[in-house]
Length: 307
Image 1 (cartoon, rainbow, N blue to C red):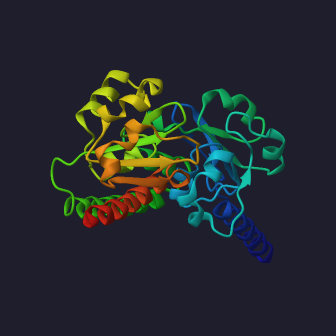
Image 2 (image 1 turned 45 degrees about the vertical axis):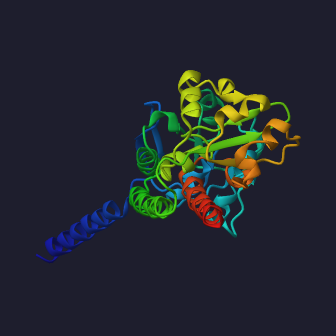
């Protein structure tokens, strides 16, 4: 009888230990589908992320990557508050990143904008493609990156805040800008003027969020260009054909001399031109765009009220 009791006790202890081990075992990876339909095994909770382009989207869902590329770091001025006090290593140009530096950072996940980068990145860490071209709205973009990074709740919270702030900025503009007033948005260069359409850096804030109206001539120019960026450029001599009631200029510090055609525009003579610092308007990620819209609204309202 004593022997049987000892055996039973040992058996119970062994089973309990086994159950304890099973209960503490957790999964460390999961399968996600990226923007181009690839199924990739990634960490459940990535800690050391590298992103070679869409820095703002990653920050929007609450992750500060260990590295990104030169342009999005240097020209993402509105993003800097989202990683203040944390270093993001500069990997160089997005098309020629330093693979040596990337490897030394020991990432557990790499996010790239281009399929052709997969082969070289996969040698370093699991790699997913995130391309905004695959989605038809900002909400779809944010929810997708939130799903890939397992930050779904953070993505939902960001979108709720984004939508509310966009509505406030739009309403502020509506209260001041009379119906039918048009706005042109340009970048001035030495040889030509670039027309900025909706959906592009600066244009998304002006036309898509604030719901301002471009002149008919600009709308036709964009339609006729069929997405060809080169066809959205005009000469200094023809700028009057694309003049709105107000003009916004994205200033990237390029050197140019205005022509008599420009100086004789009604908007120039009547002080209806607003200059925006290009460093704050280069990026078209959701964080940058909502800040751009709010900044534009303030600047435009201030100018209109002075007229």
